[in-house]
Structure formats: structure tokens, C-alpha cells
Image (cartoon, rainbow, N blue to C red; front, side, top):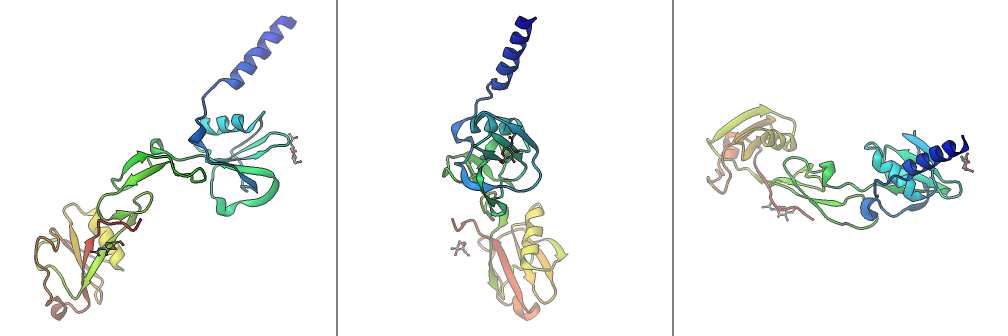
Length: 222
Ligand SMILES: *[C@@H]1O[C@H](CO)[C@@H](O)[C@H](O)[C@H]1NC(C)=O
Ligand SMILES: *[C@@H]1O[C@H](CO)[C@@H](O)[C@H](O)[C@H]1NC(C)=O
């Protein structure tokens, strides 16, 4: 009987320790003296921060964990937002790194796994298509030439609220390469060509006061 229990305990122990190996660079360094507030996905007692990390790796929704060194309290959290962290001297926060497996690049961006700083949750870099910038290619990046437009080469039309919305409409419309936005009317005319291919007309302002030619900018700031 005792033998059975022992075997069972051994099995349970083995199972607990069963290695989904946690890669060293899969998490940031701890932010000591802070705790992420809010409802935890799961709370456990673990023998070390390593086992807590292992629990977090097993759970897709886990983005970070609060860990209490004293008694091994491990709180798996659905957020990694450090700006919400609260001071708590008993705890530390360890955040899960995001890599290309998580498909973080949007709008046709190409993902490359790249070791970033030990305190950065980003373990990747997005190579964005022309007109998209930001860590996840989430930002539209465009320039404008005032009082100019491309006449003809129409590829679509829509009323919009802003230049931003006009270029967003262009991005979503197949064949759109640039746009003419008439500020006074909120009119967004899409072009099937860019100003590099067809000359801009500087007379546009006579016909459409407040017009601006909008083009995607391929060069990001960072
Ligand atoms: C761990 O310590 C904290 C703070 O003292 C306490 O609130 C919590 O109940 C403890 N957990 C266990 C399982 O002992
Ligand atoms: C494109 O954006 C970059 C970075 O913001 C800027 O330096 C550059 O002047 C822009 N190019 C044009 C043609 O607007």
C-alpha cells in the first residue's frame, strides 16, 4: 500500500516537473517590488520562479506573472502592461516575450525573431511594407503635397473625415497607390498611380480648394 502511494507521489512529482523547457530569453528580467493588479488567470504555489514561468508558458493567455519569493506564490496574469503595475515589496513581475510565433506583425509585415533588450517584451522585429510603420506595422505613414492632385487615374471615391481616413481607405482598396483629399468637402479620391509615375497638377486648388495629394511614405522614423 505504502509503496503504491510512494509511486503515485513520485509520478505526480515527475509530472509537475515534466519539462516544457523554458528558454532563458522567453521572459524579461523581473521588475522587483511591483505587482500587476487585476484578476489572475490562475494562482499556484511553486518552488521557484522557473516553475511559475513554466506554468505561464503552458497558458496562451498568460502574458506575465506576479511572483512572491517568500512563499512561492505564482499569479498568472492576462496582461503585461507595466504602466498599471502597483508597488508591492513582496512581489516581482516577469513578462513573457512576444516572438514571431505570436504573429505580431500586421498589414503584411514580415516578422523576424530578434533578441531585444532583456527588459523589452518584444523578441521580434517587423519589416513593414511601404506606408506602414511602428513595431507591429500598425501605423499608416504618409506624406502630402498641398494644392496638388493627380488628375484622372481614378481608383475609387469616398467621403471621409480626415487625411488619415482617406489613406486608410486607400490602403484597404486594391489598386490604390495614392490619393487626393479635398479638405473642404471631406472628399477622398483614390489614384491608381503615384506622383512618381504621373505628374501632379498644381492647378487643382482652383477646382478643388484645399486639396492635397497624399502618398505612402516608405521610410519610417526609427
Ligand atoms: C503568501 O504570502 C502572502 C503575503 O504574506 C499571503 O497573503 C498569502 O496568503 C501567502 N500564501 C500562502 C499560500 O502561504
Ligand atoms: C518620409 O518620412 C520620413 C520619416 O518620417 C521623413 O524624414 C521624410 O522626409 C518623408 N519623406 C517624404 C517624401 O515625405
